[in-house]
Image (tube, rainbow, N blue to C red; front, side, top):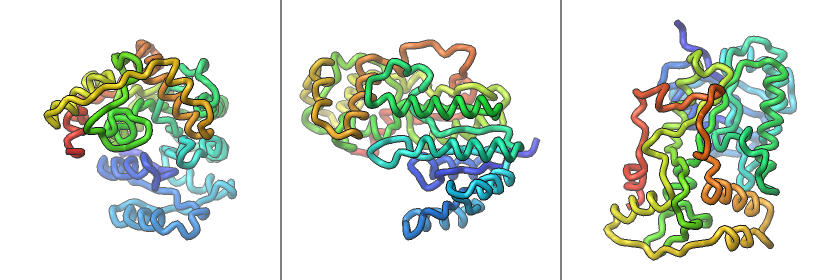
Length: 312
């Protein structure tokens, strides 16, 4: 069977550039949307040109020009959207509604993967304000997809290692501490840490797989289901030193939200659900989902002790 042609929207972003690379590596004809709004953003332009050198095809389009999106979508079989959904960068989740309209009109897409890649928003109806906005908006996009009867796969990838593992899950740095570390509660709540390149590969694996049609792909391979303490222990073993551990109670952690800017309040709320409540692992995957490492045992996913070595 011929491999699907793929359009990546948001291809210059944090996950998007990895999706482009994985799609090309897996042998898919890969298009990347070149948005007219890029203007003078030289870094994005040069990244697009580097994709072109690697074999990707650039296609122009704009979210302010509906027909350009329809025309772009008609070139491919699969659309993967990776637009940012985090408030401290850019937050564009609802722009996807325009993409959904274009896919509906084009009528040819056999799989749409919207921009999620974090927590399953369908399980976050109880989430704290203001952080719940991320989940609420993703659910609006899901409803639009399903109302339009667009074939989909939702990808929940849990904690990106670059943001959550390399820093031992500390909130104000992206580098691992070498002296003392803040532990959330008792530090024993299980979360899932994923190398972003593995997230991209698992995502591309789904697009021609009937087992993931109209389902959620949960990326939580067993050896990457770790507590924060287990992650810290891996780092301590690598550096040959025990860190001073400062436990932060749930009450004190939530109190720290007061006075923070909006983006920081969103982050605190998400950390609460991950590291105190355990929302990433406190459920069994039902019939509506599949687990990535079970579907694709050929993927040699990165374990976190291996991942942390780059920080030595």
